[in-house]
Image (cartoon, rainbow, N blue to C red; front, side, top):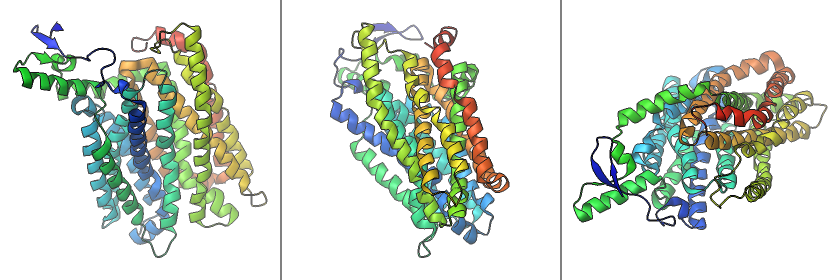
Amino acid sequence: MLMQDSNGKVYYQVGWAGPDDPLNPKKWSTIHRVGATMLVCLVAFVATIASSIDSAVLTSATAELGVSEVAESLATALFLVGMGLGALLLSPLSELLGRYLVYLVSLFIFGCWILGAALAPNFGAQLVFRFLAGFSASAPLTVAGGTVGDMWDPVEKTFALPLYAIPAFGGPVFGPVIGAYVGYDPSVDWRWAEWITLILVGATFILILLLKKESFAPRILHYKAACFRKLTGNERFLTAAEASHASLGELMSKSFLRPFFLSTQPIVVAFTLYLTIVYIILFTFLDGYPFIFAETYGINEGLSNICFMGLFIGIMLSAILVPLAYRRTLQQLKSDGDDGSGKLVHRESRLFFAMVGAPALPIGLFWMGWTDYNSISIWSPLAASVLVGFSNICIFMSAYMYIIDSYEAYAASALTFNALTRYIAAGGMTVVGIPMYRSLETHWTLTLLGCLGVLTVPIPYVLYRYGPSLRRRSQWAV
């Protein structure tokens, strides 16, 4: 198709060869797309495991490095801060380089920094390498959500995004479970938490290298246009992205500034606040579980980290809602006369998960806080943690799906602001967690967190009622 570029020059625009072009990731076979999504899930799972695994070796690390537990908690905190800052600065890379190259380069660099943390000669070096590792880990995490969107249409995203969200949110919970077998085995050095992470990152890198294909449509079309230029010798075969002549500097500037423009959007602010509180609760548990379980019930800290399986089970239980949400979406599209494209999906239907899970958060926290006595079975706070895990992942899934559907072309910027805020806040609270649990004790700390949960419960219901009018008044939303 003949078009004019931003400089007024005529070019042949390279696009898909019809609606069923096999190069289009949305037209890949279902098995291929599921396999690619599972690889993305693995990337998210490994990157987020690294964020929390160090918390399980806190005691042994402090003994070797000669620092306090609060100081050593900075190893987790700075990793999270690095993830937040990295999301802001590295998010445009996939627009220029494609998903595949960003996965490979960022995972390789991520592994190098983890290696540095494993070999760190002192406390300061450990903190620097952990921060750089978090910064690098943010790139594959940022790209992972976009990769899922590359391959699935609006209806299919009802199950595809939860499939990604469960391991992405489950990783921070599973990290301490793995680390529990390192930190409290006298024959195993605490640095094995980093070595295990490095092994996981290396295995993931190899799988991505061998099995992952490029899924970013503009990059695929870039390769297609390059082939046309080479075969014909005609340099006028260009993609729409190439014809815009956007430079890396322009992309970086846009990526850096736009998240802050979107920070005034009520929908973005609401879910950023919500997920920030969810992440504060999740990552202060890294400090709090030794108080909640080890001190109260007399178990060792290794077993208290195994108790994170309660949260993990709750996260996995959210999968039972996915078929129900998918069926509701299909029924809504059928009643609205959708043509099969999924364009008529109600954005507010994405709030279903949060509307189910929101009340469970304060209930679970109050339940855990006020049954955490040695005279009451340990299974009571464990059961409460299942409820907290279920609630957290439901809120996370709705936040991502609703923001992506509401802001479409600007969703990456909205999610970047969200990630920046929640990771930096969670990192800060990780350091505060130990003094908070010591000063307030478990009952009142969990009560305080539960009260924060109560304040945020109305958010999905308010957005369900007023979301359409908020989107209509926004220059960014659809």
